[in-house]
Image (tube, rainbow over all chains, first blue to last red; front, side):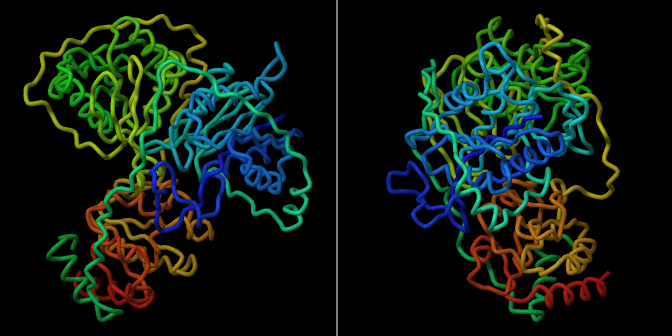
Length: 257
Length: 322
């Protein structure tokens, strides 16, 4: 059973997000990059399912040449193959991204898609458009469920669970199928140093998709870091001596006791 | 006409859908257009009265028995056919798992762009809107140029408000042609959670623990505090990654978003990823040894100190009081 996990290179943010002067991007001059958290779980699941069902796990990323770093992370986690759909580094919109991914994953003409199970993160950490997975699935005519928190493969069926208030919805999808997964699905493995070294030598397939043209569009104008309410907290005290002040706060101001 | 997608439980609209409806009514008012809704399942026919209070003039009710269980592609196919039949200017869905998923399917089926998690929308030939990025820690200003325009309303960003004048609502059956294939994805069954107590997302008080807690056993102190305050315990991504707490307890961009009256953040540094998850908290009390930690800037109240000393002392005091 062959699996594919789609991943995106995103900045590894810390305590503060700073924008570039033109307000078009996050200032990444002091930041590293990573795979979106939901997608780390997609990669882990792709590897586990391929291992358990005697198949191949592939990681695919559409992004700049530097996204090779994230694909190598996937390989170091022991994915078997990696494909980079290399762009010029501009931010591709969901329809363009989905069309290019679907082209790359459509398999040979007239046959089934090039996977049994296709995994996306529920949404990317940065842009969070919540739609690339659905659009790829629609293009490839495979079933799709978003928000997946648990996944089991049984006899050609993917049993996917989604958390809802007070319980869990269970979906059964005939394979080939696609899912959008959420962090918590599994615990992504840490790649060993040896695996990282090996991953550096593995070949990565490269394609150069051309962005499709679509009617209508959503266009980014600029980004804004919302006014923070920062003004420093009111310090109630230091150490256990602050407890009487905390009690006053809980009782008189917040009325929680 | 502005069309709003309404999710409901047994004929009673979901809070998130009322939020989306509030945004949809803003658009309708600004363009002097009618506000209409679409809802699914046989029980949707009961929505008329309550949606009237929100200014909905027509509820397009897809009362197909097969839609009594959720089926995203069938919902989307129905909406796509309704777009052909009614030609709305915009479709607004709630920023929920279902809302995002269904509207994305509509976007794919009708080859339309979609703006997810909108915060503010200026109407016009082209919509000038703002939407959440990075789980809400950044705002994107964007132009949405399509016909119709597909939008989801960011969760917890709109307070459901009834209309000034209640509308006379017509519940109108809509009967799309739905092939069996549209039902290939549907909820097979719902397993109810056997967990008791308040859920993290709905708790009025949350006590969160981060890396500063130091290990799984020290969450006992936080549990005791949460119990005294009638709340529940959460954790930062760092603590979950350490394996100290299950992912279900994670507060943040890729965990649960909380909106309690009080959030007590213990030994949490205040990374962006975490803070977007507790943005909805009315009050944040941070307990942290580091007065320079980001959380100390973002909290309303702070105790500079070691949670391992402060929390037990607080527990003792609350125990005496109770």
